[in-house]
Amino acid sequence: MARSTTRDGASGLTAGLRRIVAAWNSVGVAFAILVRGLPVDARHHVHLSFGDVVNAYTVLGGIASGALFLFHGAVFLVLKTEQAVHEDALRVATALSLPATVVLGAFGLWTQLAHGKGWTWWVLAVAVAAQSVAVGLVWWRRLRRNAMTGNRGEGWAFVCTTLVVAAVVVLLFGALYPDLVPSTLNPNWSVTIYNGSSTPYTLRFMSWAALIFAPLVMVYQGWTYWVFRRRISAERIPESIGLPRAAA
Image 1: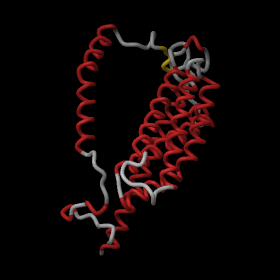
Image 2: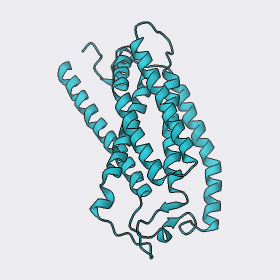
Image 3: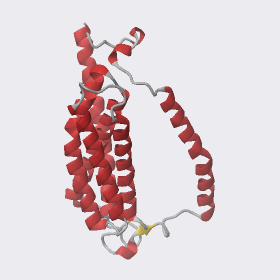
Image 4: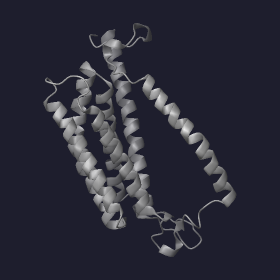
């Protein structure tokens, strides 16, 4: 019975992981489509074809996005777990580190060369440096896993992958600016922050709303992280919630 329960749990985890990967891949594809541009006409109507959505750049963007967040999530699991779960997460993070770096680097370089601006080279450099440090820390931790205790650099690795995510976001939006939806038919037909913005009243209202509620959200997120700041392991799962222990 325990073996069946474990198998069912693993199947559910695999299915959930597939959905998460598909979601993050879709995010990467969507941003790549926007950065590359769409066939927007003079009336701001979009006439899509299959090639506008599925092409080498957008597919690479989807793969890069999925790889980045899988690696980022694996590093977070390394930081937040211990014992068997920690070792599994570290093994996954190590396996993902180099493929994620190659794919993400290729997408970032393509974005910069085709759509970037002068100042976004610095953003790309920050992303490359942070990713390199994160990969180095993960491999260092993996190779010395039997000789290290306590916080073994995972915190800095997570900080670096977080910085990579932030740098990629800045790179993509920097490549877009001042466009919101670039037109591949005529640059003058692009939807920009000027001709696509809301009214001044709406912008003022949303700015005040962001100033009020964004700090509250950040405080709440910080509080939840502090509450769940300790590492967890399979041995700490309470009997009451019905999940099988590692020994099962």
